[in-house]
Image (cartoon, rainbow, N blue to C red; front, side, top):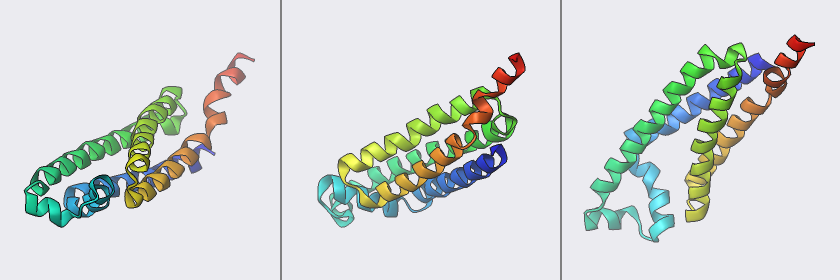
Length: 146
């Protein structure tokens, strides 16, 4: 189970990395749906009003932070999670939970359908990878004591 969960979490991290890179490389594509859902205006309105540059910079910064989180996730995954160290499970729970749940709540609140779909897919992959090996992480110490 642990090996399968590691593979699933690798898929999740690669998916999150691609999602992050899209925010860095094509920020306007990622912003288009959110901008329309939040303001009711198109990206062309933001371009003509001069706001697009500020929004683009902000989207790129968000993508860079997300990419750093993904890189950290790979370190935790290979250094500790695949060795069934309990702290790594909690690290994924807290960091992954904050990242995916926060994004999902915001996209639901704003009605941003495109990014909501991305968030739901990421959250499902994350939860499967995290919950699949739960027995490995939380029954291991009990067996040692017996």
